[in-house]
Image (tube, rainbow, N blue to C red):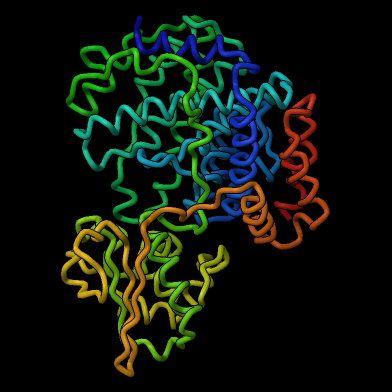
Length: 468
């Protein structure tokens, strides 16, 4: 049986009751986090011109653009929503595969759920299956280890999760879903050049995948055909994008163990996740020793990434300061040492440009490429897998901290709720505390919603306020 057939069968024939309660709980937690990320991303640089263009070009339809309230054709609505979710790189990540799955899967699921007036339980099931499909492909893709380092896994792989979620919402047949996977394969794209140059295009690559996923499902529903051996064919995904033999189809079979939705992580900081451990070390040192910005002579850090990666390069400001700061370990570490915390509001363009102390300290914050060059006290050579942050004070004192790189994410529902509350207060006066608590309660009991349109109308369609 083809891999596409196995994945399509899993997508369509898995019953809601086949999914464990733990996965539903995880899905609600991750959905809450994703909506919070969408809300803070709605005014990020690049989103307004993107939405303006979609309003100009897209047909009217039944898909709601979150928080703005525009009603656009489903692929266009999903495109806008995905861009907002991923705009600040604050959205979930799938460990080991470097993929932001829900920025694609959630907009795809919601678009068709809205059109078909599905209930909350069905939406959760579609999100869980979408994540499951994308995570299985991503896991095997990254396991082969021969893919080019500058492919962008999120948009290459995540779109198939969007196809699965949408196909499930529309009750496609297995053959139609196979076709949809194949049609999407013709549109797979994604590279890291925009990220390397720190351009706004980085923010729309998941959105491009989400739009392509929905278009693929719509086309398949009309009888359009796609290749069946999308993944293992002579020109299939695994051979083409890894130049390696595809995995055995059996690894894609069976129900989740564990389910991918339960493996997703929730970011603490709106920055690239590679240096989150260093941020936490910097916060620890600041709180323990209480030094002031003026006390610091220089800072060194070790990322174990091999040196001179994107985030470890010296910090500089270009035409998009927000992206410059988000993908700069020197800036994020300096921010943590300067303020003792790293918050969402610290990454607005205005906040970055006004924070001269952090900019100055970032210029004195440098990566140490080789572990032995850190000259750390009390640490052994076999600890080179840790992240390290080392602060040199002007009085000659040297402070250092290591972090294993684990436990850098929010895990509990309560922690994610606190992150959500912070996100929902970034744009003042849109939602009061009572409304925010209502949204949290609805999310925590999402399976009880009879019609997803009621939820969207009550909490996600605030266009009159947004456009004032």
